[in-house]
Image 1 (cartoon, rainbow, N blue to C red):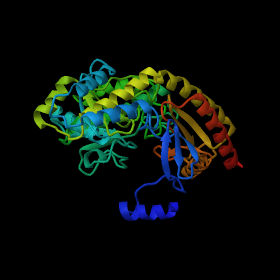
Image 2: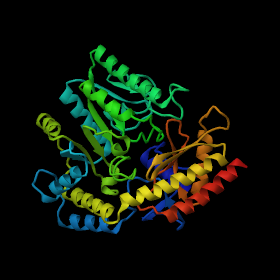
Image 3: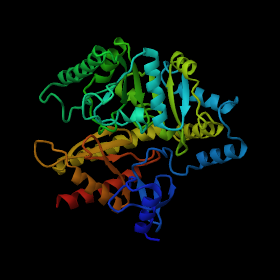
Amino acid sequence: MSNATLAQRRDRAMGAGAPLFYSEPLHIVRGEGVYLYDERGKRYVDMYNNVPCVGHANPHVVDAMVRQQATLNVHSRYLHEGIVAFAERLVALHHPGIESVIFTCSGTEANEVALRIARMVTGKRGIICTNATYHGNSEAVGALTRLTAERNQAGDVAAIPFPETFRPIKPGATEAELCEAYLDRLQSAIRALEADGTGFAGLIVCSIFANEGLPDVPQGFMPRAAEIVRKAGGILIADEVQAGYCRAGTWWGYEISGFTPDIAVTGKPMGNGLPLAAAAARKELIDAFRSRTRYFNTFASSPLQAAVGMAVIDVIEREGLRESVGAVGTWLKGELAKRKPRSAAIGDVRGHGLFIGVEMVKPGPAKEPDEKRTVEVVNKLKDKGFLTSNAGAYRNVVKIRPPLVFTRTHAEEFLKAFDETIATLDG
């Protein structure tokens, strides 16, 4: 069967418009470590997927999954040592203010729990996010996605410009002045929510502003933002679905950005492919939520989730992946930065650990985003056997986010393909 025929069947079975990557979509049939294989046996280096953080089909995780499923998997209305031990292990990885956890199956669900907690404990509705963010797919969480106006239609979500130094809201300002300018926008949004009676419940951010394009943030912004939020009586939510689990070379993205959240949301990488996510916070916040909602999720807090979640942390710690991510990511980012002076199309190289963005721009001082060129780069890299994507506020950032088991050897192979791709497009 041809890929075109399979795509047509997919449109009929799943609805036309279900997203696919690349101008010629891939038919992937197998994964192992950092590699994916198509139906013809061609091997690709996966440099995009955050979910299989310890590698596709990791044998330790697969073994834990099989053994637990063959023993017991039930809902959470029975006592089970496994899920309690996993919760204890997870919160111990956070800062001391994180004490208890609510497990879910997706980051969307966990972010919705976080929003509900913020609104319940403050008694207010207003949530602030950035204007180029993404936190999930549900109606409530989806209201935060890429707002083009300052307020959503319901009036209970306010958007502020995401903080960055590359294309700042105040050109020519010093970094300190720029930090103040972005903080002023946050304070203005809080005042507006309070003035119209909506009230301010909290601020939610990805700790490293991943969907915004991994911007370099004015120094001191997040610690100061945290102070402002708490002084206003709000809850600070760190969405760690992409930033956490050693992705940035530290266990949590908020360690990179220099703040401590009231609620930390994790997802995707926790189960290496098994649906597993969490909202973790102070015990008093979790207790308040449980007392008022009796929240229950059939597939969350299960023995299977616990076994797989434990296995993922085992691999990260046993194989020293946090340290490896820091070393390999720093080297790769440095090498990519060396390419910037060689091509007018490379506007910037940013990121942390094994999460790197290469911003593509049109030649000239205006730094005009070049989405078309970015898509060409991504497709040509795919043809050379390296899977990336385009992302960011303007869809012009080559998004590099491989599994944590990605090594320097893989990085060297990627750089060769990247150089060939840029040279071809630069002519």
